[in-house]
Image 1 (cartoon, rainbow, N blue to C red):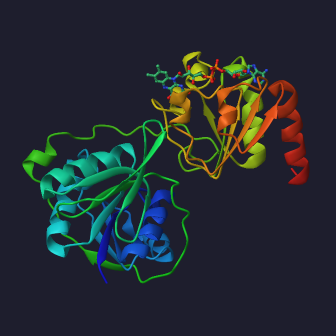
Image 2 (cartoon, protein in one colour):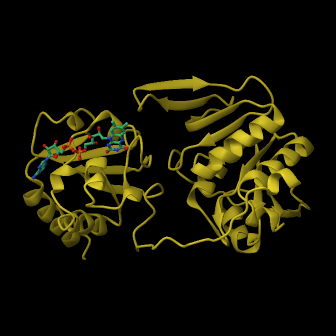
Image 3 (cartoon, rainbow, N blue to C red):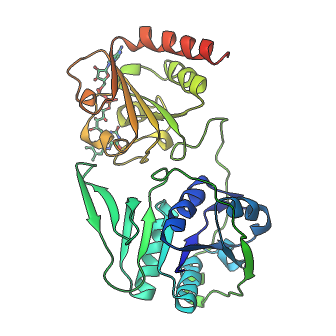
Length: 318
Ligand SMILES: Cc1cc2nc3c(=O)[nH]c(=O)nc-3n(C[C@H](O)[C@H](O)[C@H](O)COP(=O)(O)OP(=O)(O)OC[C@H]3O[C@@H](n4cnc5c(N)ncnc54)[C@H](O)[C@@H]3O)c2cc1C
Protein backbone atom coordinates (compact mmCIF):
# COMPACT_ATOMS: atom_id res chain seq x y z
CA UNK A 1 0.00 0.00 0.00
CA UNK A 2 1.26 3.49 -0.81
CA UNK A 3 2.94 5.29 2.03
CA UNK A 4 1.54 8.68 3.08
CA UNK A 5 3.80 10.94 5.15
CA UNK A 6 2.06 12.96 7.86
CA UNK A 7 3.98 15.73 9.61
CA UNK A 8 3.04 15.61 13.30
CA UNK A 9 2.05 18.87 14.99
CA UNK A 10 2.83 18.46 18.64
CA UNK A 11 3.74 20.44 21.69
CA UNK A 12 6.58 18.44 23.18
CA UNK A 13 4.88 15.23 24.22
CA UNK A 14 1.27 15.80 23.28
CA UNK A 15 -0.06 15.35 19.78
CA UNK A 16 -2.30 18.13 18.50
CA UNK A 17 -5.79 17.16 17.41
CA UNK A 18 -5.13 18.19 13.81
CA UNK A 19 -2.56 15.37 13.56
CA UNK A 20 -5.28 12.82 14.39
CA UNK A 21 -7.37 14.40 11.63
CA UNK A 22 -4.49 14.09 9.13
CA UNK A 23 -4.03 10.45 10.13
CA UNK A 24 -7.73 9.74 9.57
CA UNK A 25 -7.42 11.25 6.10
CA UNK A 26 -4.11 9.50 5.33
CA UNK A 27 -5.65 6.09 6.12
CA UNK A 28 -8.11 6.57 3.28
CA UNK A 29 -5.24 7.22 0.85
CA UNK A 30 -2.71 4.59 1.89
CA UNK A 31 -0.56 3.61 4.84
CA UNK A 32 0.17 6.55 7.16
CA UNK A 33 3.70 7.17 8.42
CA UNK A 34 4.09 10.02 10.87
CA UNK A 35 7.17 12.23 10.83
CA UNK A 36 7.98 13.34 14.39
CA UNK A 37 10.37 16.26 14.73
CA UNK A 38 12.42 16.93 17.86
CA UNK A 39 12.12 15.32 21.27
CA UNK A 40 8.98 13.87 22.92
CA UNK A 41 8.00 11.09 20.51
CA UNK A 42 7.59 8.56 23.35
CA UNK A 43 4.82 10.66 24.85
CA UNK A 44 3.01 11.07 21.55
CA UNK A 45 3.28 7.53 20.25
CA UNK A 46 0.20 6.10 21.96
CA UNK A 47 -2.09 8.68 20.37
CA UNK A 48 -0.46 8.19 16.96
CA UNK A 49 -1.05 4.43 17.27
CA UNK A 50 -4.66 4.98 18.31
CA UNK A 51 -5.34 6.97 15.12
CA UNK A 52 -3.71 4.56 12.72
CA UNK A 53 -0.03 5.44 12.29
CA UNK A 54 1.65 2.36 10.83
CA UNK A 55 5.10 3.89 11.31
CA UNK A 56 6.61 6.84 13.14
CA UNK A 57 9.82 8.29 11.75
CA UNK A 58 11.41 9.90 14.78
CA UNK A 59 14.03 12.55 14.09
CA UNK A 60 14.93 13.61 17.61
CA UNK A 61 17.68 15.99 16.47
CA UNK A 62 17.82 19.24 18.46
CA UNK A 63 18.18 21.09 15.15
CA UNK A 64 14.47 20.52 14.61
CA UNK A 65 13.65 22.21 17.87
CA UNK A 66 16.08 25.11 18.11
CA UNK A 67 15.89 26.45 14.56
CA UNK A 68 12.83 27.91 12.86
CA UNK A 69 10.99 25.77 10.26
CA UNK A 70 13.77 25.28 7.63
CA UNK A 71 15.19 22.03 9.17
CA UNK A 72 11.72 20.47 9.18
CA UNK A 73 11.42 21.08 5.45
CA UNK A 74 14.90 19.58 4.94
CA UNK A 75 13.99 16.48 6.92
CA UNK A 76 10.74 16.00 5.01
CA UNK A 77 12.55 16.50 1.69
CA UNK A 78 15.07 13.80 2.56
CA UNK A 79 12.34 11.39 3.70
CA UNK A 80 10.35 12.13 0.54
CA UNK A 81 13.41 11.25 -1.56
CA UNK A 82 14.06 8.05 0.46
CA UNK A 83 10.54 6.70 0.84
CA UNK A 84 8.81 8.01 -2.31
CA UNK A 85 5.49 8.50 -0.54
CA UNK A 86 2.28 8.90 -2.55
CA UNK A 87 1.62 12.20 -0.75
CA UNK A 88 2.76 14.38 2.15
CA UNK A 89 0.10 15.81 4.46
CA UNK A 90 0.69 18.74 6.80
CA UNK A 91 -1.65 20.86 8.87
CA UNK A 92 -2.65 24.13 7.24
CA UNK A 93 -1.40 26.15 10.18
CA UNK A 94 1.08 29.03 9.98
CA UNK A 95 4.02 26.72 10.54
CA UNK A 96 2.59 23.82 8.49
CA UNK A 97 2.09 26.01 5.43
CA UNK A 98 5.61 27.40 5.67
CA UNK A 99 7.14 23.93 5.95
CA UNK A 100 4.98 22.75 3.04
CA UNK A 101 6.03 25.66 0.81
CA UNK A 102 9.73 25.05 1.48
CA UNK A 103 9.27 21.33 0.89
CA UNK A 104 7.54 22.01 -2.43
CA UNK A 105 10.49 24.12 -3.61
CA UNK A 106 13.05 21.55 -2.45
CA UNK A 107 11.30 18.60 -4.11
CA UNK A 108 9.97 20.42 -7.18
CA UNK A 109 6.47 19.32 -6.20
CA UNK A 110 3.05 20.86 -6.40
CA UNK A 111 1.47 22.15 -3.20
CA UNK A 112 -2.20 22.62 -2.31
CA UNK A 113 -2.91 24.66 0.80
CA UNK A 114 -5.95 25.09 2.98
CA UNK A 115 -7.66 21.93 1.72
CA UNK A 116 -10.99 21.16 3.37
CA UNK A 117 -11.24 17.71 1.78
CA UNK A 118 -9.12 15.21 -0.14
CA UNK A 119 -10.52 12.38 -2.25
CA UNK A 120 -8.96 8.96 -2.85
CA UNK A 121 -7.39 10.16 -6.11
CA UNK A 122 -5.76 13.07 -4.21
CA UNK A 123 -8.10 15.73 -5.56
CA UNK A 124 -8.19 18.44 -2.93
CA UNK A 125 -11.19 20.62 -2.21
CA UNK A 126 -10.36 24.23 -1.34
CA UNK A 127 -12.67 26.99 -0.25
CA UNK A 128 -11.46 30.29 -1.76
CA UNK A 129 -12.39 33.99 -2.09
CA UNK A 130 -13.70 34.12 1.42
CA UNK A 131 -15.48 30.81 0.93
CA UNK A 132 -17.53 32.09 -2.03
CA UNK A 133 -16.06 29.49 -4.40
CA UNK A 134 -15.11 25.84 -3.95
CA UNK A 135 -12.23 24.62 -6.10
CA UNK A 136 -11.12 21.06 -6.88
CA UNK A 137 -7.39 20.80 -7.55
CA UNK A 138 -4.80 18.11 -8.13
CA UNK A 139 -1.02 18.22 -8.11
CA UNK A 140 0.51 17.50 -11.51
CA UNK A 141 4.19 17.31 -10.73
CA UNK A 142 6.35 15.73 -8.07
CA UNK A 143 4.94 14.35 -4.82
CA UNK A 144 1.58 15.91 -3.92
CA UNK A 145 1.92 18.05 -0.80
CA UNK A 146 -1.38 18.98 0.81
CA UNK A 147 -1.91 21.33 3.74
CA UNK A 148 -5.25 20.44 5.34
CA UNK A 149 -7.28 22.93 7.36
CA UNK A 150 -7.72 21.96 11.02
CA UNK A 151 -11.20 20.64 11.84
CA UNK A 152 -11.97 19.82 8.19
CA UNK A 153 -11.97 16.06 8.94
CA UNK A 154 -13.56 14.33 11.93
CA UNK A 155 -10.83 12.22 13.58
CA UNK A 156 -11.67 8.51 13.88
CA UNK A 157 -9.51 6.05 15.82
CA UNK A 158 -8.27 2.88 14.06
CA UNK A 159 -5.42 1.32 16.04
CA UNK A 160 -2.16 0.49 14.28
CA UNK A 161 1.39 -0.43 15.26
CA UNK A 162 3.07 3.02 15.23
CA UNK A 163 6.35 1.21 14.76
CA UNK A 164 9.19 3.60 15.54
CA UNK A 165 12.04 4.08 13.09
CA UNK A 166 14.78 6.41 14.27
CA UNK A 167 15.98 8.87 11.64
CA UNK A 168 19.35 10.51 12.01
CA UNK A 169 19.26 14.12 10.88
CA UNK A 170 21.49 17.14 10.96
CA UNK A 171 20.36 20.44 9.43
CA UNK A 172 22.48 22.18 6.78
CA UNK A 173 24.11 25.52 7.57
CA UNK A 174 21.54 27.23 5.35
CA UNK A 175 18.74 25.82 7.50
CA UNK A 176 20.39 27.06 10.69
CA UNK A 177 20.20 30.76 9.91
CA UNK A 178 17.14 31.52 12.05
CA UNK A 179 17.22 30.34 15.63
CA UNK A 180 14.47 30.25 18.24
CA UNK A 181 15.77 32.46 21.06
CA UNK A 182 12.89 32.24 23.50
CA UNK A 183 9.57 30.47 23.89
CA UNK A 184 6.84 32.21 25.84
CA UNK A 185 3.80 30.16 26.73
CA UNK A 186 0.58 31.99 25.92
CA UNK A 187 -1.71 32.18 28.91
CA UNK A 188 -4.19 29.40 28.44
CA UNK A 189 -7.71 29.28 29.67
CA UNK A 190 -9.59 26.08 30.33
CA UNK A 191 -11.42 26.60 27.06
CA UNK A 192 -10.50 24.62 23.96
CA UNK A 193 -8.14 26.14 21.41
CA UNK A 194 -10.09 28.29 18.94
CA UNK A 195 -9.10 26.54 15.71
CA UNK A 196 -9.52 23.07 17.19
CA UNK A 197 -12.77 23.53 19.13
CA UNK A 198 -15.89 21.61 18.12
CA UNK A 199 -18.05 24.54 19.21
CA UNK A 200 -17.18 28.23 18.87
CA UNK A 201 -19.24 31.10 20.30
CA UNK A 202 -18.25 34.46 18.78
CA UNK A 203 -19.29 37.94 19.79
CA UNK A 204 -19.34 41.06 17.64
CA UNK A 205 -19.96 44.77 17.87
CA UNK A 206 -23.46 44.06 19.14
CA UNK A 207 -21.94 42.84 22.42
CA UNK A 208 -21.16 46.49 23.15
CA UNK A 209 -18.21 46.36 25.59
CA UNK A 210 -15.36 44.31 27.02
CA UNK A 211 -17.37 43.69 30.21
CA UNK A 212 -20.30 42.34 28.20
CA UNK A 213 -18.03 39.68 26.69
CA UNK A 214 -18.56 37.87 30.00
CA UNK A 215 -21.98 36.92 28.57
CA UNK A 216 -20.29 35.31 25.55
CA UNK A 217 -17.78 33.52 27.79
CA UNK A 218 -20.53 32.15 30.04
CA UNK A 219 -22.46 30.84 27.05
CA UNK A 220 -19.26 29.31 25.66
CA UNK A 221 -18.47 27.66 28.99
CA UNK A 222 -21.96 26.16 29.25
CA UNK A 223 -21.25 24.44 25.91
CA UNK A 224 -17.57 23.61 26.48
CA UNK A 225 -16.85 25.94 23.57
CA UNK A 226 -14.06 28.30 22.52
CA UNK A 227 -14.70 32.05 22.36
CA UNK A 228 -14.17 33.98 19.14
CA UNK A 229 -14.79 37.60 18.14
CA UNK A 230 -15.34 39.73 15.07
CA UNK A 231 -12.75 42.29 14.09
CA UNK A 232 -15.06 45.09 15.22
CA UNK A 233 -14.89 43.61 18.72
CA UNK A 234 -11.13 42.99 18.72
CA UNK A 235 -10.32 46.41 17.20
CA UNK A 236 -12.42 48.01 19.91
CA UNK A 237 -10.23 46.25 22.48
CA UNK A 238 -13.14 44.23 23.89
CA UNK A 239 -11.45 40.91 23.25
CA UNK A 240 -7.81 40.00 22.40
CA UNK A 241 -6.84 39.93 18.72
CA UNK A 242 -5.73 36.31 18.91
CA UNK A 243 -9.42 35.36 19.09
CA UNK A 244 -10.44 37.22 15.94
CA UNK A 245 -12.23 35.05 13.39
CA UNK A 246 -12.07 35.97 9.72
CA UNK A 247 -9.95 36.84 6.75
CA UNK A 248 -7.32 38.61 8.84
CA UNK A 249 -7.90 36.42 11.89
CA UNK A 250 -8.29 32.71 12.52
CA UNK A 251 -10.13 30.29 10.25
CA UNK A 252 -12.44 27.97 12.13
CA UNK A 253 -14.54 25.07 10.95
CA UNK A 254 -16.29 23.71 14.05
CA UNK A 255 -19.33 21.45 14.28
CA UNK A 256 -21.29 24.41 15.67
CA UNK A 257 -20.56 28.15 15.24
CA UNK A 258 -22.67 30.57 17.21
CA UNK A 259 -22.47 34.18 15.96
CA UNK A 260 -23.78 36.68 18.48
CA UNK A 261 -24.22 40.34 17.52
CA UNK A 262 -22.21 39.86 14.31
CA UNK A 263 -23.53 41.23 11.01
CA UNK A 264 -21.79 38.74 8.68
CA UNK A 265 -19.36 40.88 6.67
CA UNK A 266 -17.56 38.96 3.91
CA UNK A 267 -14.28 39.20 5.82
CA UNK A 268 -15.86 37.56 8.87
CA UNK A 269 -17.55 34.85 6.80
CA UNK A 270 -14.20 33.96 5.26
CA UNK A 271 -13.12 32.58 8.61
CA UNK A 272 -16.22 30.64 9.63
CA UNK A 273 -18.48 29.71 6.78
CA UNK A 274 -17.22 26.15 6.45
CA UNK A 275 -18.58 25.51 9.98
CA UNK A 276 -20.89 22.50 9.90
CA UNK A 277 -23.85 24.17 11.65
CA UNK A 278 -24.21 27.93 12.06
CA UNK A 279 -26.46 29.56 14.62
CA UNK A 280 -27.08 33.29 14.76
CA UNK A 281 -28.42 35.66 17.39
CA UNK A 282 -28.99 39.15 15.98
CA UNK A 283 -31.64 41.80 16.55
CA UNK A 284 -31.71 42.83 12.89
CA UNK A 285 -33.63 40.32 10.73
CA UNK A 286 -31.92 41.79 7.64
CA UNK A 287 -28.38 41.10 8.92
CA UNK A 288 -26.48 39.25 6.13
CA UNK A 289 -25.28 36.58 8.59
CA UNK A 290 -28.79 35.10 8.49
CA UNK A 291 -28.08 34.02 4.88
CA UNK A 292 -25.59 31.49 6.28
CA UNK A 293 -27.58 30.45 9.32
CA UNK A 294 -28.97 26.97 9.88
CA UNK A 295 -30.78 28.36 12.93
CA UNK A 296 -31.39 32.00 13.71
CA UNK A 297 -32.87 33.93 16.58
CA UNK A 298 -34.00 37.49 15.83
CA UNK A 299 -33.70 39.15 19.19
CA UNK A 300 -31.71 41.25 21.61
CA UNK A 301 -28.64 39.27 22.67
CA UNK A 302 -28.87 40.70 26.19
CA UNK A 303 -32.18 38.89 26.57
CA UNK A 304 -31.49 35.79 24.50
CA UNK A 305 -27.96 34.86 25.61
CA UNK A 306 -28.56 34.70 29.41
CA UNK A 307 -31.71 32.59 28.88
CA UNK A 308 -29.89 30.29 26.47
CA UNK A 309 -26.96 29.89 28.88
CA UNK A 310 -29.32 29.13 31.77
CA UNK A 311 -31.27 26.56 29.77
CA UNK A 312 -28.12 24.81 28.51
CA UNK A 313 -26.67 24.72 32.05
CA UNK A 314 -29.97 23.36 33.41
CA UNK A 315 -30.11 20.60 30.80
CA UNK A 316 -26.50 19.63 31.30
CA UNK A 317 -26.95 19.67 35.07
CA UNK A 318 -24.43 22.52 35.48
C1 LIG B 1 -9.08 44.02 4.82
C2 LIG B 1 -10.13 43.73 5.86
C3 LIG B 1 -9.99 42.61 6.63
C4 LIG B 1 -10.96 42.31 7.62
N1 LIG B 1 -10.82 41.16 8.37
C5 LIG B 1 -11.80 40.84 9.23
C6 LIG B 1 -11.73 39.63 9.99
O1 LIG B 1 -10.76 38.86 9.93
N2 LIG B 1 -12.75 39.34 10.83
C7 LIG B 1 -13.85 40.16 10.97
O2 LIG B 1 -14.76 39.83 11.76
N3 LIG B 1 -13.92 41.31 10.29
C8 LIG B 1 -12.92 41.68 9.44
N4 LIG B 1 -13.00 42.87 8.78
C9 LIG B 1 -14.06 43.82 9.18
C10 LIG B 1 -15.41 43.54 8.54
O3 LIG B 1 -15.50 44.19 7.30
C11 LIG B 1 -16.55 44.06 9.45
O4 LIG B 1 -16.33 45.43 9.69
C12 LIG B 1 -16.63 43.36 10.80
O5 LIG B 1 -16.66 41.96 10.61
C13 LIG B 1 -17.91 43.80 11.50
O6 LIG B 1 -17.98 43.20 12.76
P1 LIG B 1 -19.39 42.98 13.44
O7 LIG B 1 -20.23 42.09 12.60
O8 LIG B 1 -19.13 42.56 14.84
O9 LIG B 1 -19.97 44.46 13.52
P2 LIG B 1 -21.17 45.11 12.73
O10 LIG B 1 -21.06 44.94 11.27
O11 LIG B 1 -21.29 46.51 13.25
O12 LIG B 1 -22.44 44.27 13.19
C14 LIG B 1 -22.93 44.26 14.49
C15 LIG B 1 -24.20 43.42 14.49
O13 LIG B 1 -24.69 43.31 15.82
C16 LIG B 1 -26.09 43.38 15.79
N5 LIG B 1 -26.53 43.86 17.10
C17 LIG B 1 -26.31 45.07 17.68
N6 LIG B 1 -26.83 45.10 18.92
C18 LIG B 1 -27.39 43.87 19.13
C19 LIG B 1 -28.09 43.30 20.23
N7 LIG B 1 -28.32 43.99 21.37
N8 LIG B 1 -28.56 42.05 20.11
C20 LIG B 1 -28.35 41.34 18.95
N9 LIG B 1 -27.69 41.83 17.89
C21 LIG B 1 -27.21 43.09 17.98
C22 LIG B 1 -26.43 44.35 14.68
O14 LIG B 1 -27.73 44.13 14.18
C23 LIG B 1 -25.33 44.02 13.65
O15 LIG B 1 -25.79 43.06 12.71
C24 LIG B 1 -12.05 43.19 7.80
C25 LIG B 1 -12.18 44.32 7.02
C26 LIG B 1 -11.22 44.60 6.06
C27 LIG B 1 -11.40 45.83 5.20
